[in-house]
Image 1 (cartoon, rainbow, N blue to C red):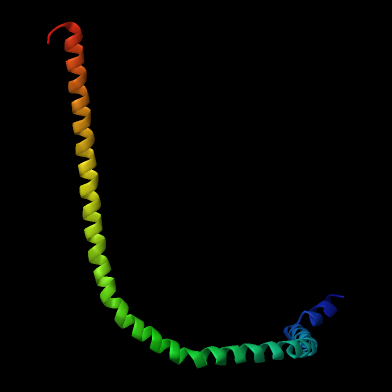
Image 2: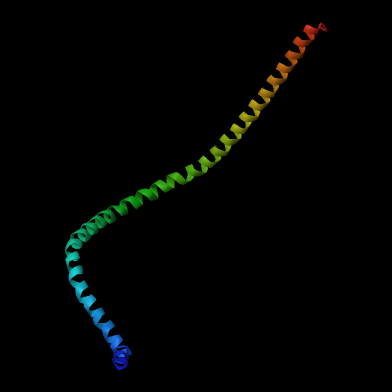
Length: 123
């Protein structure tokens, strides 16, 4: 019995079993993949047709992009300057509103003081 296990567990026998299993798996996979290629081929042809259609219109679109880039670049610079100007105006407006609120509050406090003084008979 021990002698049989020694023969079965030799490197050559194990390698032979692995090779046979690999060949069996490869032979079994070929028909499976062959059946799938029948369904894949039409999809591949449609994808290639779509790709060619998109590539055909790409040259025209590249020219349009180049033309628009020459128009947009100067506008981008102006937009940056206008955005900076807008931000500074917005900051000035916020500062003005703060000052106005502060002055209104001070006027309200002064009015309350005058009313209180009148009530107390000082003025």
